[in-house]
Image 1 (cartoon, rainbow, N blue to C red):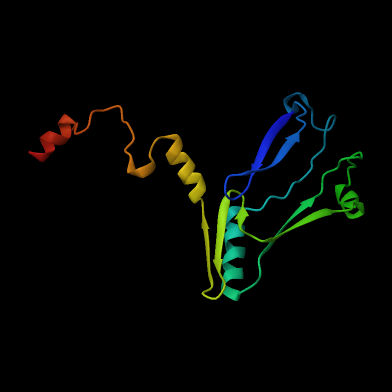
Image 2: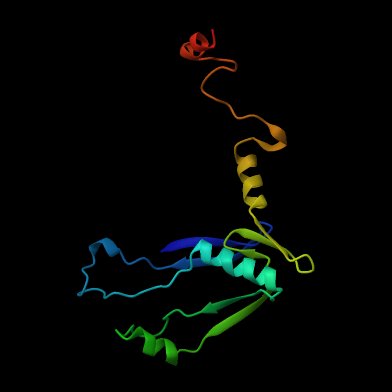
Length: 153
């Protein structure tokens, strides 16, 4: 089993998630599994869609659609089974947080910003860089390479 935590926009824990891992390195194609395609959007596609929505003033909504095969055998014709499935959706309203990125929008100005401020602040705190602190380096401060000194003269 693999366990994960899902966090919200302010870093608060929102959900516990888990999944069963089937030791895929021991499986043989055609015997233990067949090809199954899982479409995953690219970051570029997301940025183009968000930019278009901001430019044209479209509403941007977010929802979670559960499409897992929980109680049945996966048939070779996955598309058929997908059509027969019932989808469980949870409407999450206006998009504010997506894939670890905060989404800020000003509809009147046609501006949409994506940022990871909370993530960066967490990294700064983890490495002691908050409040403009400088990171420790393996070389002493002010050290210059001799070659650089010779070229300067």
